[in-house]
Image (tube, rainbow, N blue to C red):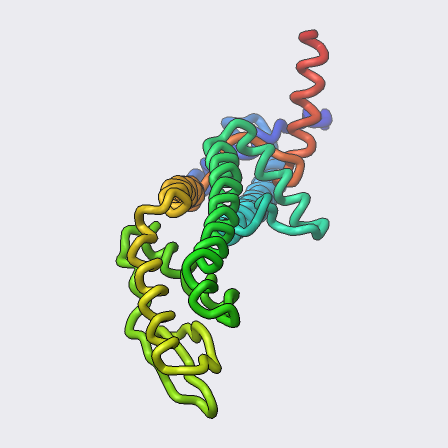
Length: 284
């Protein structure tokens, strides 16, 4: 009996489809001019190949979904760190895994709006930090000009800290008032407090404590008109906008459910990138 020719994968897949649609083995064998034994063997082979391809497809899909979640986690970590302007540069971490995922995210989004938003955030955060330092210097100056002359032993650090908090309220468009003042007898002297702030302690007389209270209140009332407060207001608004822009880009990434492009950590990504480099070299 002559040896049968090789069976192409597409042919046995066609036989499997016909069999599953109800065609008999003998009918498929006559149509294909093969033995029934050959048809049966290749139908089983096609079934195993199909099942294996489905498993591989599921594994690859699951691997890609996990890869997407890993990169989304990096983007969300960037967003989390961007909630405070104290960081000079936003980076997900120094570990090997974090670095690899960060580079992979950049490979997927080489010119993405996420990086533009991140750059804008870093610039506005630096501007806001500078504005806060300038505000601190101005509040220290106000204490020396307005409060120390009333009583040389006033707690300058506490006074300046309260004025910075009041100025930050003013910069956000709120009233700079910190709340009710309190003058309390403590031991041999008097303490001056305002809300949660202790402004000074061991003041020799109640009258002196009252003078300090009035002077502090006048400085607070003038805060909205000071130039450093205006600069802080502008810097704060710019940083708020940059933070919101970064939030938006990360949220878009989360809602898209898919990443453009490819990176070395993608399932099969290393081979695909190698093929692309090879094609570019041939074209060059």
